[in-house]
Every structure is written in C-alpha cells, then in structure tokens.
Image (cartoon, rainbow, N blue to C red; front, side):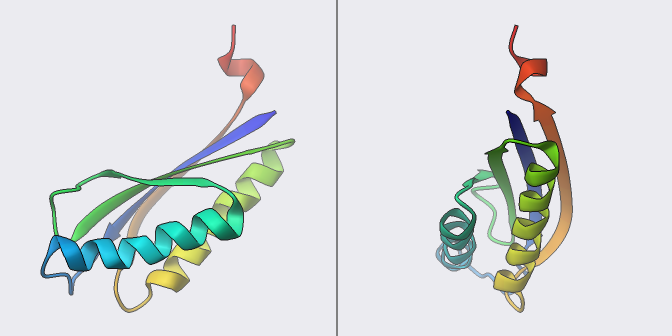
Length: 102
C-alpha cells in the first residue's frame, strides 16, 4: 500500500474577505474530494484573505497510481481555480506504508 501526500500553495488576488476566499476554496476542495476520492483540507493561512495552502492525501496499490492521482488533482485545482486563484507552489511525495510502519 502506498500513500501520496501533496501540498498546494494558492494565491487569490481578487479576494477581499475570508468569505470570498472560502467560497473559492470550497469549490476546489469539494470538487477534488468527490472526483478523486482524496482527502483535501486547508492546512495553513486560514486567517489570510489572499493566500491558502491545501493538504491532499490519497492511497493506492502502487506508487505510480498515487503520483498520477496527485498530478491529476493538481491539474484539477489549476483548472477549477482559474481566474480566481493561481497555484504558486506544489510539493508531492509518495511513501510506502511499509516504510512508515514499524
């Protein structure tokens, strides 16, 4: 079993309130959860209007599958947030559960 973990940094230039930011992020987060069956959450910058960090995890039977899913989620985030937010950074990592458990 493999676990994929990613962090996406977003800049939301037109956001003028936390309410606007949350509306933009809600469509991205809910869409990624439903389309890819992944765990997605805002993990940092909750008090900033124009910045967000999303944490994403997925599990699969192969490292390649997890890498593919994380790449697809990244493309989905860019498409879904287009015009409202821009992806400013991303980090992906896939680990074997055997490497993590004792």
